[in-house]
Structure formats: C-alpha cells, structure tokens
Length: 322
Image 1 (spheres, rainbow, N blue to C red):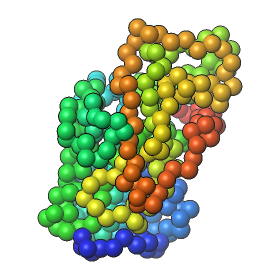
Image 2: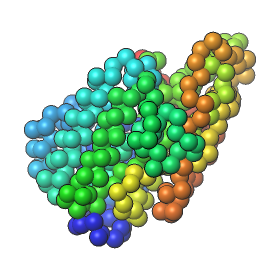
Image 3: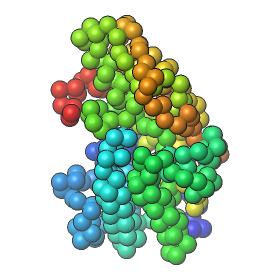
C-alpha cells in the first residue's frame, strides 16, 4: 500500500491494534471499532507491554502483525502534572511513539493513525486554529514538553510518508471528555475536575463552590465517542500529510461549562469565582474545515455528553484514583 492509496472501508476481519486501549481515547476507539464490526481487535495494558521498551514493542509487532494501528497510547495529564514533570512527558511520549512507529513500519502496517493534541499549536495562534498554524509561534510553557513530543510524532508520520510512501495519517483532537476520563485530584483536566468538584458539593450539600479565574476563557470540548467515530472515518476517507484537527467547531466559556456541570449533577448552590487565580489562554478553538471537507461532523451535544459522563463517574466513583 502506497501514497497513491485511495481511502476505502477497512477490512473488518483484519488485525487491528489499538495502542492505549484502556485510556480515555483508546477505550472510546475500541468501543467504536467493536460496534463497527471489527472482529480481530488487539490491545495490551502497560503492565502487559511497556511501549517504552523497544525490544518488547518490536517483539509484539512481530508476533501479532497488525494490519491497522491507532496510536492512542501516551503519558497525559493536566497543567500541574505537565509543568511539574516535563522530562517524563517528553521522554516517555517520544519513546512510545518512536518504538511503535518504527515497529509498525518494519512489520508492514498498512494504515496507521497517530493521535496528538491541540496543545501542539502556538499559544497565541489565530482563532480558530488552522492546521497550518503548526510551528509558527511559541508554545504554551506549561505543557511545551508534551507538545514537542506530539509535534515530533506528526513529523515522523510525514517523514514515513516521504521516505517509505506509506499512507499513514495524524489527527489532533481538541479537549476530550467522556467515560474513562481521569478524575484524579492532581492529574485531571478542567471538565472532569469540575464534575468531581460539583458532584461532591451536591452530595455533601455544600452551599457554594469556588472556581479558579473569572470564568471568561472559552474552550472547545469533544466527547470521546465522537472522537472515536472521527478516527475511523479519517482512516477510511482521508489520506494526506497534514494533521487533521478534530473538534466541534464551537466553544463555551468556563463559566458556562461550570453551569452545565452543576445542572448535570443537580447542584443548586452558589458558584463563586476566585479572580486572583489565572485564567490561562482567552480562547482555544480548532478550525475543523479540513475534517468537515472529509465528510465528518460531531454529533454529541455538550450538555448530553456531560450528563453521560456524570453518570459514568457516579457508577465508577468508588474506583476513581486520587
């Protein structure tokens, strides 16, 4: 299979490896592939296969010989984790990516989708952020190590296309949420953090909840099930060197987001805002024109997705790590 490959439906009986199949994104992709009729899915937990171990990764590919791969495995975390452990986020993600991509190339993987993050774009990129904004400005300092690793992954996909002619592709999702998210106190992103905080306030009858900042920054959120559907759609309908933004094309303020979460958990107390705390970037919205041209649009409304995620959190609350 070469770059002149015309995207087409994938073979539902082919071996399909989802790297990171237990994470937020990977588990969503796994569910979507099952529903879509794929019969030979393979995945390994990090305890079963350490993708940072090059020898083990190559042995796994030699043994299983997957025809298709989605690389969703990554070390991820919120602002605190990223700013505290930049070496870990850079080193671990680079090793995972290089090992998987090199092994996939050596063992003849036909179609591969590399997943990155919208943090690859410059901190002050023009809104909404187009794919050609990549490498045009300075990164957000709090997660630049993670962003550099993901940029390296995009460039490796492009290099594989140039040097080996393989029709591999990259996709960059916006802020994701949904079942399987990280709700830990130290490592969670804004939406799961709000869900945990407001759910606890509702259960304990706390009269008010204080949030950081003014609530004015605008953010885009995509349900992981929509992300998973977009991944399969791109693998079957897109073949190009440029990464594809995956999002909804719409955003909300953090204050609006907190209101949606409060409604979903049934919290009726007061929402307070500590304006001495930083707001962060005023807006972060992806331009999804390329994705739209490829024939895909998000379908899960934010309020619906938040209710779904709250229910999952409540069902699994006892097992959530701190």
